[in-house]
Length: 116
Image 1 (cartoon, rainbow, N blue to C red):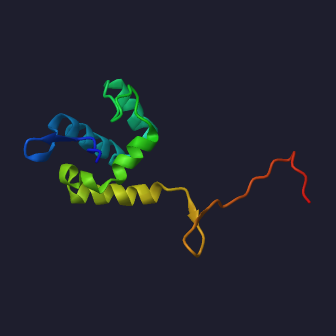
Image 2 (image 1 turned 180 degrees about the vertical axis):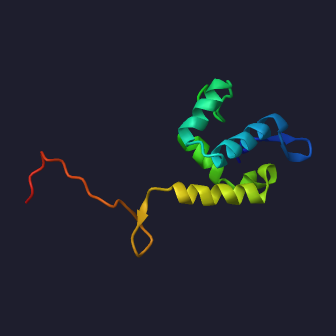
Image 3 (image 1 turned 120 degrees about the vertical axis):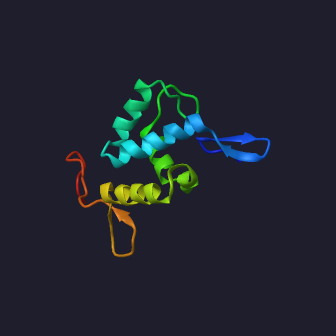
């Protein structure tokens, strides 16, 4: 089992790692203030905060995954977590068909391809 960022394995089980929990709280705070995933990545890099994998720079996917993970409710609170989920849904640019499958609004074809 992989322990989520912001938590630590201690003598009594999994506990919140306060220093990393502050990073998690700031990620949610910046996102809800309107920062894009890229801006959050830049902020973390500027503050020299290593990614969960130990890299010097986070990825947008890692930040998005963190924002979507229910395991952060004890750190940020249910209200903040739900606000972030509504914001993620609002910012999503993927269209869905009637069956709920993601699809693009426009299909792009290379002019180099011949139609049959």
